[in-house]
Image (spheres, rainbow, N blue to C red):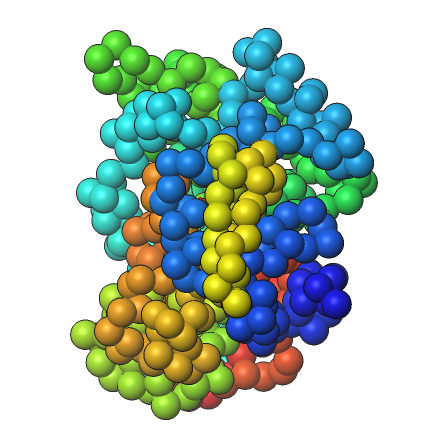
Length: 411
Ligand code: HEM
């Protein structure tokens, strides 16, 4: 019975997870799943887990591997490579104080001013894409706008070449499959191969840039230094891979999912098109309503108690995996009134957990909002009659949720 509650392989779950989240939240909000991890769906539990010092993000260091866990040998290999200094853990997989040090260093280069400076470029890329589509009167949103804009922007930011984008996109997509909590062995093999290709490619670019510094973010990261502290070559590579992948695997889905949500709520779409004062809050509401990152994981470093639905305490043992379902938390009626409705002026939309919370709060949040804001508002203001021209299809992923095909008629 409990196994039925959380089954991410169910196609209905993939197509629309929110009713499943609701059932979990109302019947078993601290759900011990058949997959070996605890699934949290209440806002307060998720927020507390993301913010709490007693929870680690460094899974490799803290998870007590089950003997039958297909990731066990892989984790061991990875630990060895890190110990030997061959690779560095990504910032996303570090805990304080190592995380604090790295986050401070990269934040020196990844500043709000550096991001805001990109606005005219983003606008130009979006306008060019819309110009091309206007001539035809139609557009496949993902291929023509939602993917190419963030891809070009992250490439610009790091001053990376954009030729070979198909290959790079394929590596990125393969790589992010490692975020799937239920990934099988073959998938994990493929993610390691893709990571190897991506690492070799970006490693060469970084080496070249060391000798040809410019005004770009990559050059700034190479030079980032505080009190004699610098990113090691392995840390830099691992951070650039993360930035690059995050730069084009997430924002694409905010533009895609967000546009679809608006098309399904045309009154809200028209209201936003006519009222620029909604620009900031509307993006938060889109992130709350159907965000690109649906879940992330933590490992408690001590036994941790959560309240079950009957008021009793469920103890989650230290060293076990906890899945914090961000999408479920952002639909918890205890925090968001009528959570299944899209209200672009929702007063507390910015409490959504789509960018997580705590020390790992998304570093690229303002970049993602800038890109998605320009893309969506330009689309709906230039083409007020924009409409769906076919059925959207969804990518078959649990962690990163996004439409992969969204055909639009523009007039
Ligand atoms: C709408 C788009 C995006 C969403 C929904 C999103 C979501 C997230 C989430 C949920 C986390 C935290 C994961 C965790 O705590 O386990 C995160 C971390 C991160 N994101 Fe994003 N992200 C987006 C776009 C971006 C972009 C465009 C970049 C950079 C180019 C970026 C860079 C990062 C980095 C570097 C971290 C790690 C921060 C740390 O560990 O301190 N993200 N993101």
